[in-house]
Image (tube, rainbow, N blue to C red; front, side, top):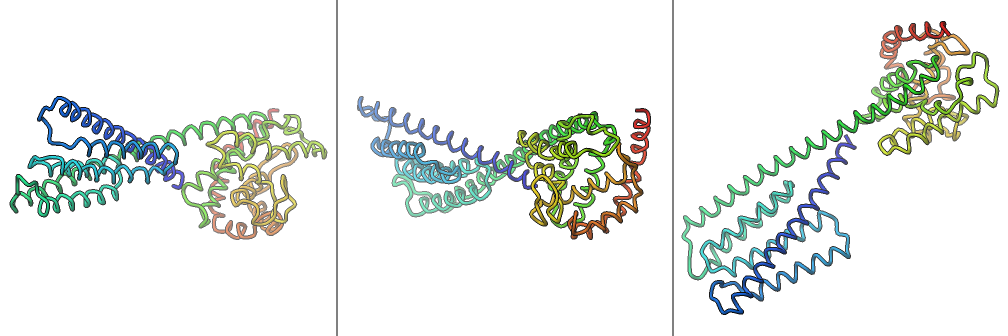
Length: 398
């Protein structure tokens, strides 16, 4: 959920900056043409405009100054947005007084449209209220000298303004709907790509060691089962621990097959080689920005609660929670499956050994929480029994 929100905010901030930039350019073009238009009439003394050329030149100069200031000061997108909108309010007031027509009040109808294209509810409400206040004030207190509206026309103006503001609000809602759909599309596409990458790694690891066939999938399921019982994990966190479980042994790609498949006890040097898989695995996934959030689980899942683990010798709660959860899931599956150097043990025996290692190898709080998901562990264990038998047949055929 946090990633989803962050993605949405990034997308929206980008939209906000683009709209402000376009609005700035449009106003520049409008003022530039107005200045050229009125300069032409002034030079040829043609009486086709009542607008004040100096007023437009001052407005243009102020806008250019704002644009120049933006080049030297990196304003936040939201601040720059309000600078342009406040400027627009001032410009509409200037245009109102420059126009001698009774329809001059209609310029204020532009304000909810300008605010609405940003797609922000607060911005639309604030500037719509400002525009409504200005429209009402000028219609009653400062009407055009050559025309005075009666009460009915003023009420109709306000009604028209409210209708236009409401339509702007509907446009805003549609913009938000489009944003969410696009963000969800990107999010779903990203997650699908990540899962494909992860599954490719898993296949590569298991192709090197038939004894660990299905191990990554089972560790992932056990880890999610345990994590789902903890208050620290929301939906997005569970997705992370799921992928971390699948990738926790990815570093074994760099471990020679003769070591992974060795039937006897490993020599010390061989064991040191195996221990490098957590570090090399973390180095592999940190190169991919979309997988970096999995690094903690992959790197530290062999750390021990008492500080005697590897690769960093972290102790207690200094070990990331993902890694502590994965350590239990990894150990449980390792004990209950047959490896090249020993036979797997039964479900109850494995659970008993986890409890014996409480406070030494494993987080005691997590071991206590494990009791709440024992039935779920058994379901996973029983459900994967078919895969386990297939794996053992493959091993026997070697």
